[in-house]
Length: 256
Image (tube, rainbow, N blue to C red; front, side, top):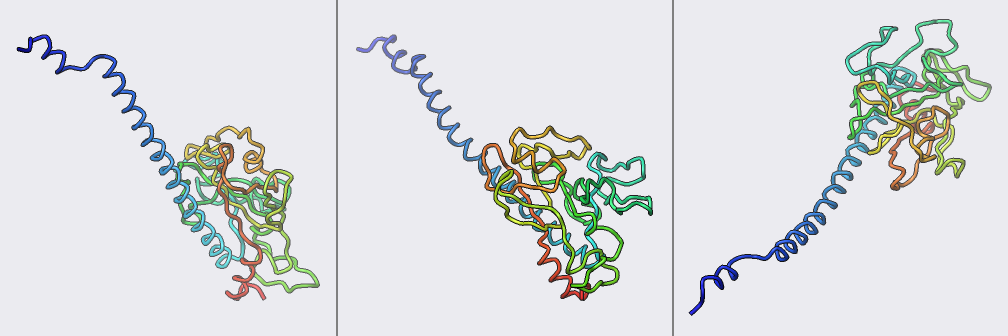
């Protein structure tokens, strides 16, 4: 005959057994969550890369139609608002002073700095992490003046740059390292998951990355870094190839 106490002990679990079950469940759940988070990151990276591909096509199409690349937009303007000059968020920010040496506003040296003019181009405002794209363009490739040309090439009316024109943006593998591309007229950067250096739709700018290579992509100079992602570097970028752009401009009859 089995006593009632024995039945109760057989039907229940001890605190140690419950703790073991919970620990195993936590390990299994953790093993599922890590791949899920990684899948989400990969999906957002893929979405952003697809958007950058569309942006590249939009930039080239804009140049073919308008004879120049667009100026950057003012990243400090919140979505749906305008700045003191009456320029709306997402519109290219052109200098209203006709006598200015450059048409674009916010020019440093010969480079116009800001965010991608998504309204002007008809593309998405932000990357998959809801942050605006940094955009820089050689100012003389975005003005309304015909290219000056030289003895080595003809000047096409209504085109800002010519077959002999040079631009001054550079793509490096790392700061001070190997050159990937030079004489680049325009660069677009998504600042990735961590977002360091990017503008938000509210017009605020996130802090600069402590990683030197990432910081290079948001400091407003002529150099950019493009390399495989690491824990510290997650920027994604595209740049306009001068040879491809000029070849398409020739095919479209915009350049001689």
